[in-house]
Amino acid sequence: MKAALRLTTVAGILLASRPGVAAESDPAAVALSRDISRIVGSQEGTGWFVDSSALNEIHPILMESVCRATPETRTRTRALLEEEVSEKGDPRKLFQERREVDADVDDARRAERELQAFDYANARVQAECPYWVDVELDFRGRQSDADRFTLRLRTGGLLQLRQTEVTGVSRRSYGALVG
Image (tube, rainbow, N blue to C red; front, side):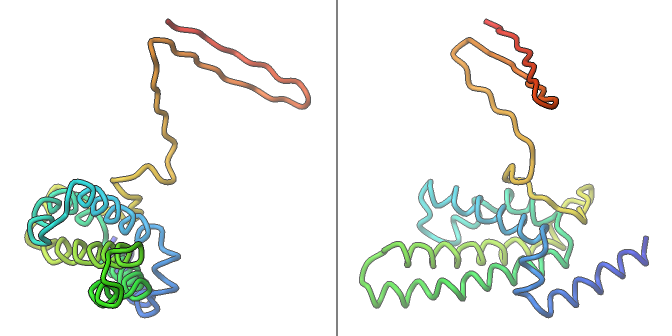
């Protein structure tokens, strides 16, 4: 177990030294950045005004994801988020140039907030992650259903279930109507 953890740590350090390549190819880092994006986006939708207030409000939700990610995943996630901030630019500078909050300013502000939120949570991992929460080596995210099978049903009181089996050129369907 310790040897596997050391190997994972060494691999993480080597991958983190090339953040653009490593982070994009790391599903766990992508999943964590996706969680952070979803959390920040949700908070923005309810009115993100003062950074400290918004960060305090989303703190427990951020920790649910960040606490489950390995240190290497968190390092690569930060690299992904930094890369996004670099690509989008400085929102203050963009705003000064344009004198309005257009789509580019909004995107840059969102990228900056995602990095802020990550740093806010990551700085508290040692002190605040519950001891009973396990780190997941293959972290897949908690805030989205990406890469998962999901079944959602919305009905007006009528539900139809159907399974179709295709064998060669014939097709058989089985269905049930529940009302």
